[in-house]
Amino acid sequence: MDKKRENITIPYKIEEAKIKNIYIRVKDGQVMVRCSPRVSKEYIEEVIYKKSAWINKKLAEYEKEKQAGNLEKMEILGNEYNVKIQYKQINKIDINVTDEVEISLPTQFENEEISTQLKTRIKDAIYKKVVFEETKLAMQKYGILTGLNPEKWRIRKINTAWGSCSSNKNITISSNLAKFDRQTIEYVVLHELTHLKYMNHSKEFWKMVESYMPNYKQIRKQLK
Image (cartoon, rainbow, N blue to C red; front, side, top):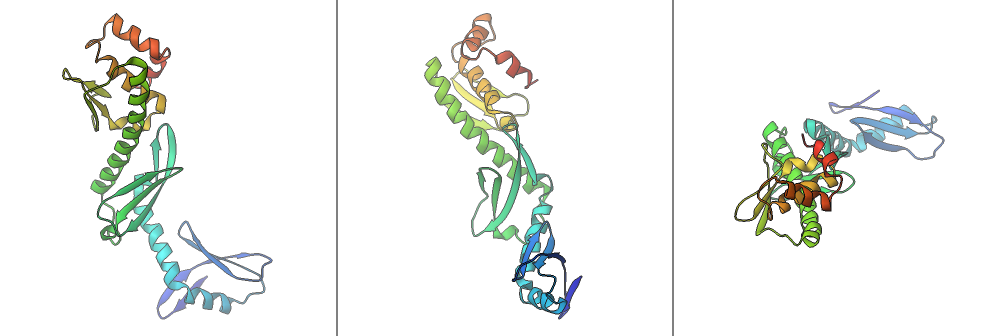
């Protein structure tokens, strides 16, 4: 059924229920009207017309989220998260990961299709933030246990390795680890911290890793 007035067409579906009022919601790009079967079609369409600005706004927001394409869901720390995109009066991308991934974009993107380049930037920013927080915790945990701490550490998008430790005791962790679970990230951090003592993969190196993480071999298999 459609509501047409002043060249405005809004498709909608009716959900009949034993209620006194009429409720309108927009879910998955569909306008749903919940009301009593006694409510007339004319009254329903009158209500839809009055709320058409709000309805069209919600429909536009849904279309924007669809444009995010591969951002509708993301794999983080071994779990799949829903992605919610919203637009605010801000100057840069803001990301918050709770029970879902909330992405706030500057309003300048609101009337534009989200490009592949922007999608990549957003995903990279999410992964970097997640791995930074996890690495921070792991550095504290294994720094205390091993007594080893780098001069400094950082997160970068590395496609050729999961981590590295330089001769000047600087550690780099790959943001690509964001897809793996917490224990896997801890393993990589422990691995690089151990290089502060053994700059090789000698028996002593692996013996030290195993002393702090007995199941490291099983974890390591996930990274191959």
